[in-house]
Image 1 (cartoon, helix red, strand yellow):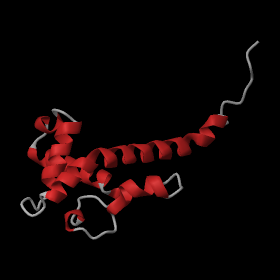
Image 2 (spheres, rainbow, N blue to C red):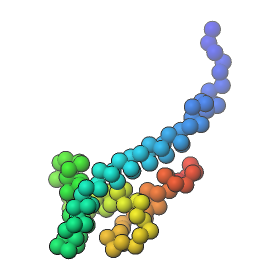
Image 3 (cartoon, rainbow, N blue to C red):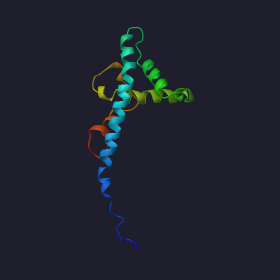
Image 4 (cartoon, rainbow, N blue to C red):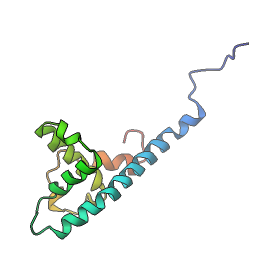
Length: 121
């Protein structure tokens, strides 16, 4: 006999959907922040010679996403590096570091899913 279960009701485990997505996003963010840390420390030690943080972000991207930058045009490379910057520096969003100014996208795009407990974020 076929069950006459009401399919319009969401499944119980869907109550945790938002929690798992947010936790996954936070975990991903921590992973990339920690993976970038050695590149950032190296840049900080050479900061006087190399004032642009983008060089360390490019090096990190080439190490982490092998072959990706080479497949993108210059504009797409610039945008991708800017997005990586948002991800690896989301914890420094309010530090007023010069390399965090003039970003293409606001830090809220990355921070809201992690710290604002709403479905809209």
